[in-house]
Length: 354
Picture 1 (cartoon, rainbow, N blue to C red):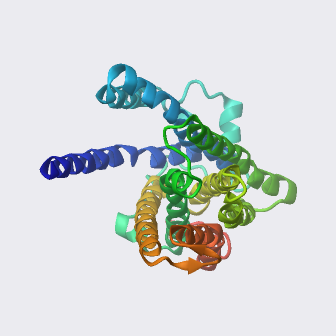
Picture 2 (cartoon, rainbow, N blue to C red; picture 1 turned 45 degrees about the vertical axis):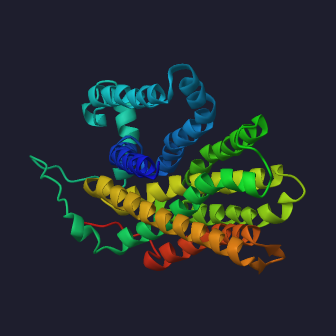
Picture 3 (cartoon, rainbow, N blue to C red; picture 1 turned 30 degrees about the horizontal axis):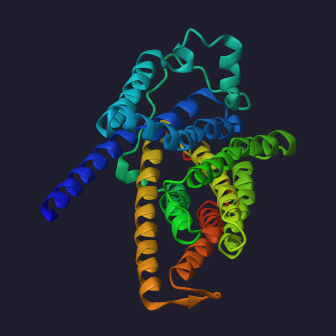
């Protein structure tokens, strides 16, 4: 039995690595497409829309995957969901073109897309020189890269803590059964609240259009505002004794703030880097987010084991509940920490010129 378990775990890890390799290309391509099709003032809003797609998937998964597995078997559920990715890849491969090469983009739309360049029209040359593209290692020499890495690593670690540990929290701290309708409803409501983040990407547009701020300054102002909303997680554990709906709602608000923060964070790439570097920097940030997530999840697991084994007492809580309170406290202040680090590294707008 132990040998079978080890083999199953090994193949599961291999399958998860293959999934990660395929998934890794999605966000760099999406962020670069956003930079190509939207002026800077609209990119965060556009990013928040496509970024909400992952939330929609998480919202639908508890209701669709078990149904597919029950009717066709768990193997078929993997195949059906995986096939949807190939269908979408087909549409992307054959339909996507750059704006100036897309026959469906008219002159007025193209002018709006390129409106960022209106203030400083480029000189006319006979043939445009190919844009330079630094190597992967050269990208790490810019403070802007480290600013994005810092914001991404901290924020993604918190986000994946909520995704990974919230079901466990509802079972252990709130006494819910993972097979109950109430449990599924709670997760559904949480992800539904996260969808509020769609509005978060529009805030920088208001700062840019109404207050005349440059895109990076408007983005950072919006991110600072969103960094305060995760503080709601500080009240999740204290209010859990009254009703399990309090932590669900408060973590949902924190999750919505994360998605709004993330949409604006992704858009800072287009503010600070030339288009030839956008996909590379997004990929570097994705790697940083993965490393940050690994460290935080591993630390959370060790903390929960330690607090349960030692009966840790903190903030009036004992054992694993004390561990959850520590993690919720960290998650609440993490975005403010990330914002300060980014601001120290890049205090003012400065785009990299190659």
